[in-house]
Image (cartoon, rainbow, N blue to C red; front, side):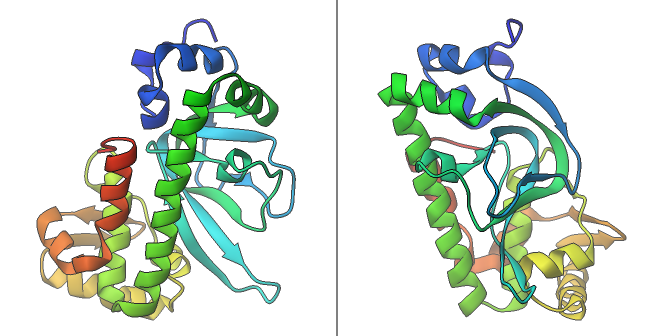
Length: 238
Protein backbone atom coordinates (compact mmCIF):
# COMPACT_ATOMS: atom_id res chain seq x y z
CA UNK A 1 0.00 0.00 0.00
CA UNK A 2 2.17 2.88 -1.19
CA UNK A 3 -0.36 5.54 -0.12
CA UNK A 4 -0.58 4.45 3.51
CA UNK A 5 1.41 6.73 5.80
CA UNK A 6 2.08 6.35 9.49
CA UNK A 7 0.60 9.76 10.22
CA UNK A 8 -2.72 8.63 8.72
CA UNK A 9 -3.26 5.52 10.85
CA UNK A 10 -5.52 5.48 13.91
CA UNK A 11 -4.24 2.23 15.37
CA UNK A 12 -2.17 3.06 18.46
CA UNK A 13 0.35 0.26 17.96
CA UNK A 14 1.10 1.19 14.36
CA UNK A 15 1.33 4.86 15.30
CA UNK A 16 3.80 4.01 18.08
CA UNK A 17 6.24 2.15 15.81
CA UNK A 18 9.50 3.77 14.86
CA UNK A 19 9.48 4.76 11.16
CA UNK A 20 11.78 1.88 10.19
CA UNK A 21 9.45 -0.70 11.78
CA UNK A 22 6.39 0.85 10.18
CA UNK A 23 8.12 0.63 6.80
CA UNK A 24 8.59 -3.12 7.36
CA UNK A 25 4.80 -3.53 7.60
CA UNK A 26 3.48 -0.77 5.38
CA UNK A 27 3.34 -2.54 2.01
CA UNK A 28 1.78 -5.65 3.56
CA UNK A 29 -1.08 -3.82 5.32
CA UNK A 30 -4.44 -4.19 3.57
CA UNK A 31 -7.42 -1.97 4.54
CA UNK A 32 -10.58 -3.93 5.35
CA UNK A 33 -14.11 -3.07 6.40
CA UNK A 34 -15.13 -5.01 9.50
CA UNK A 35 -18.85 -5.44 10.06
CA UNK A 36 -20.51 -6.27 13.33
CA UNK A 37 -20.42 -10.04 13.82
CA UNK A 38 -17.52 -10.68 11.44
CA UNK A 39 -15.36 -13.52 12.76
CA UNK A 40 -11.66 -12.67 12.64
CA UNK A 41 -10.36 -15.78 14.40
CA UNK A 42 -12.17 -19.13 14.35
CA UNK A 43 -11.41 -21.55 17.20
CA UNK A 44 -8.86 -24.26 16.38
CA UNK A 45 -8.38 -22.95 12.83
CA UNK A 46 -5.17 -21.44 11.40
CA UNK A 47 -4.89 -17.70 12.00
CA UNK A 48 -4.27 -16.43 8.48
CA UNK A 49 -4.32 -12.68 9.19
CA UNK A 50 -3.57 -10.34 12.07
CA UNK A 51 -5.85 -7.29 12.18
CA UNK A 52 -4.73 -3.90 13.47
CA UNK A 53 -8.05 -2.21 14.22
CA UNK A 54 -8.57 1.37 13.07
CA UNK A 55 -12.15 1.60 14.34
CA UNK A 56 -14.60 -0.74 16.04
CA UNK A 57 -14.15 -3.28 18.83
CA UNK A 58 -13.49 -7.02 18.83
CA UNK A 59 -14.50 -9.51 21.51
CA UNK A 60 -12.38 -12.50 22.42
CA UNK A 61 -14.68 -15.32 23.52
CA UNK A 62 -13.94 -18.47 25.52
CA UNK A 63 -16.19 -21.41 24.61
CA UNK A 64 -16.88 -24.80 26.17
CA UNK A 65 -17.92 -28.02 24.44
CA UNK A 66 -21.28 -27.62 26.15
CA UNK A 67 -21.94 -24.27 24.50
CA UNK A 68 -21.06 -21.91 27.35
CA UNK A 69 -19.59 -18.62 26.12
CA UNK A 70 -18.16 -15.56 27.83
CA UNK A 71 -16.00 -12.65 26.79
CA UNK A 72 -12.50 -12.77 28.25
CA UNK A 73 -11.11 -9.66 26.57
CA UNK A 74 -11.63 -6.97 23.98
CA UNK A 75 -9.53 -4.79 21.79
CA UNK A 76 -9.97 -1.84 19.46
CA UNK A 77 -7.65 0.73 17.96
CA UNK A 78 -5.41 0.20 20.99
CA UNK A 79 -4.25 -3.16 19.72
CA UNK A 80 -4.68 -6.05 17.34
CA UNK A 81 -6.64 -9.24 16.80
CA UNK A 82 -4.23 -12.16 16.69
CA UNK A 83 -2.13 -12.11 19.86
CA UNK A 84 -1.50 -15.91 19.65
CA UNK A 85 0.57 -15.25 16.52
CA UNK A 86 2.89 -13.00 18.53
CA UNK A 87 3.51 -15.91 20.90
CA UNK A 88 4.51 -18.26 18.10
CA UNK A 89 1.35 -20.34 17.76
CA UNK A 90 -0.91 -20.89 14.77
CA UNK A 91 -4.35 -21.28 16.36
CA UNK A 92 -6.34 -20.81 19.57
CA UNK A 93 -9.45 -22.34 21.16
CA UNK A 94 -10.85 -18.82 21.53
CA UNK A 95 -13.04 -16.99 19.02
CA UNK A 96 -12.55 -13.36 18.02
CA UNK A 97 -15.33 -11.42 16.32
CA UNK A 98 -16.43 -7.81 15.87
CA UNK A 99 -18.78 -6.62 18.60
CA UNK A 100 -18.89 -3.10 17.15
CA UNK A 101 -18.24 -2.73 13.43
CA UNK A 102 -15.43 -0.62 12.07
CA UNK A 103 -12.33 -1.00 9.95
CA UNK A 104 -8.79 -2.25 10.15
CA UNK A 105 -5.49 -2.93 8.48
CA UNK A 106 -4.78 -6.62 8.13
CA UNK A 107 -1.53 -8.38 7.38
CA UNK A 108 -0.86 -11.98 6.46
CA UNK A 109 0.43 -13.89 9.46
CA UNK A 110 3.63 -15.00 7.75
CA UNK A 111 4.40 -11.45 6.58
CA UNK A 112 4.13 -10.22 10.17
CA UNK A 113 6.37 -13.04 11.38
CA UNK A 114 8.97 -12.12 8.77
CA UNK A 115 8.93 -8.50 9.95
CA UNK A 116 9.27 -9.59 13.59
CA UNK A 117 12.30 -11.69 12.70
CA UNK A 118 13.89 -8.63 11.09
CA UNK A 119 13.25 -6.19 13.95
CA UNK A 120 13.74 -6.70 17.67
CA UNK A 121 12.14 -3.31 18.39
CA UNK A 122 8.97 -4.31 16.53
CA UNK A 123 8.90 -7.61 18.40
CA UNK A 124 9.40 -5.81 21.72
CA UNK A 125 6.49 -3.41 21.19
CA UNK A 126 4.13 -6.21 20.16
CA UNK A 127 5.12 -8.30 23.19
CA UNK A 128 4.46 -5.31 25.44
CA UNK A 129 0.97 -5.24 23.98
CA UNK A 130 0.57 -8.94 24.78
CA UNK A 131 1.52 -8.14 28.39
CA UNK A 132 -1.03 -5.31 28.56
CA UNK A 133 -3.72 -7.57 27.07
CA UNK A 134 -2.88 -10.35 29.54
CA UNK A 135 -3.42 -7.92 32.42
CA UNK A 136 -6.79 -7.00 30.91
CA UNK A 137 -7.92 -10.64 30.73
CA UNK A 138 -6.76 -11.36 34.28
CA UNK A 139 -8.72 -8.39 35.60
CA UNK A 140 -11.76 -9.52 33.64
CA UNK A 141 -11.58 -12.78 35.59
CA UNK A 142 -11.12 -10.84 38.84
CA UNK A 143 -14.09 -8.60 38.07
CA UNK A 144 -16.34 -11.49 37.05
CA UNK A 145 -15.58 -13.27 40.30
CA UNK A 146 -15.68 -10.42 42.80
CA UNK A 147 -17.75 -7.45 41.61
CA UNK A 148 -21.47 -6.77 41.49
CA UNK A 149 -23.21 -6.81 38.12
CA UNK A 150 -23.56 -3.02 37.94
CA UNK A 151 -19.82 -2.61 38.66
CA UNK A 152 -18.95 -5.16 35.97
CA UNK A 153 -21.30 -3.48 33.52
CA UNK A 154 -19.80 -0.05 34.28
CA UNK A 155 -16.29 -1.44 33.72
CA UNK A 156 -17.25 -3.00 30.41
CA UNK A 157 -18.98 0.16 29.17
CA UNK A 158 -15.89 2.18 30.11
CA UNK A 159 -13.65 -0.21 28.19
CA UNK A 160 -15.86 0.17 25.11
CA UNK A 161 -16.05 3.94 25.58
CA UNK A 162 -12.23 4.09 25.66
CA UNK A 163 -12.09 2.59 22.19
CA UNK A 164 -14.69 4.58 20.23
CA UNK A 165 -15.19 8.17 19.20
CA UNK A 166 -18.13 9.89 20.87
CA UNK A 167 -20.44 8.59 23.58
CA UNK A 168 -22.69 6.19 21.64
CA UNK A 169 -22.14 2.44 22.01
CA UNK A 170 -24.04 0.20 19.59
CA UNK A 171 -24.84 -2.61 22.05
CA UNK A 172 -27.91 -4.77 22.66
CA UNK A 173 -29.01 -6.26 25.99
CA UNK A 174 -28.51 -9.75 24.58
CA UNK A 175 -24.97 -9.00 23.52
CA UNK A 176 -24.05 -7.42 26.86
CA UNK A 177 -25.45 -10.49 28.63
CA UNK A 178 -23.19 -12.74 26.55
CA UNK A 179 -20.17 -10.57 27.23
CA UNK A 180 -20.73 -10.54 30.99
CA UNK A 181 -21.90 -14.15 31.23
CA UNK A 182 -25.19 -13.28 32.94
CA UNK A 183 -28.90 -13.47 32.17
CA UNK A 184 -30.46 -10.80 29.97
CA UNK A 185 -32.78 -9.83 32.82
CA UNK A 186 -29.74 -9.07 35.00
CA UNK A 187 -28.33 -6.79 32.31
CA UNK A 188 -31.65 -4.96 31.96
CA UNK A 189 -31.77 -4.43 35.72
CA UNK A 190 -28.19 -3.13 35.84
CA UNK A 191 -28.77 -0.82 32.88
CA UNK A 192 -31.88 0.53 34.58
CA UNK A 193 -29.87 1.28 37.73
CA UNK A 194 -27.30 3.28 35.74
CA UNK A 195 -30.03 5.00 33.76
CA UNK A 196 -31.95 6.03 36.88
CA UNK A 197 -28.74 7.64 38.15
CA UNK A 198 -28.49 9.52 34.82
CA UNK A 199 -25.10 7.95 34.10
CA UNK A 200 -26.19 6.39 30.81
CA UNK A 201 -29.15 6.38 28.46
CA UNK A 202 -30.12 2.94 27.18
CA UNK A 203 -32.14 2.64 24.00
CA UNK A 204 -32.84 -0.36 21.80
CA UNK A 205 -29.47 -1.52 20.48
CA UNK A 206 -27.62 1.51 21.81
CA UNK A 207 -26.15 2.85 25.06
CA UNK A 208 -25.16 6.50 25.45
CA UNK A 209 -22.61 7.46 28.10
CA UNK A 210 -23.92 10.63 29.77
CA UNK A 211 -21.52 10.98 32.72
CA UNK A 212 -18.18 9.19 32.36
CA UNK A 213 -16.88 10.34 35.74
CA UNK A 214 -19.81 8.79 37.59
CA UNK A 215 -19.50 5.68 35.44
CA UNK A 216 -15.91 5.37 36.65
CA UNK A 217 -17.09 5.87 40.23
CA UNK A 218 -19.63 3.07 39.75
CA UNK A 219 -16.99 0.73 38.34
CA UNK A 220 -14.73 1.39 41.33
CA UNK A 221 -11.59 -0.70 41.47
CA UNK A 222 -12.85 -3.05 38.75
CA UNK A 223 -11.52 -0.52 36.23
CA UNK A 224 -8.14 1.13 35.86
CA UNK A 225 -5.29 -1.32 36.39
CA UNK A 226 -5.15 -2.70 32.80
CA UNK A 227 -5.56 0.81 31.42
CA UNK A 228 -2.66 2.09 33.54
CA UNK A 229 -0.52 -0.87 32.43
CA UNK A 230 -1.23 -0.13 28.77
CA UNK A 231 -0.25 3.50 29.23
CA UNK A 232 2.92 2.50 31.09
CA UNK A 233 4.01 0.04 28.42
CA UNK A 234 2.71 1.65 25.21
CA UNK A 235 0.96 5.00 25.70
CA UNK A 236 -2.50 6.53 25.75
CA UNK A 237 -5.26 4.90 23.72
CA UNK A 238 -7.96 7.53 24.24
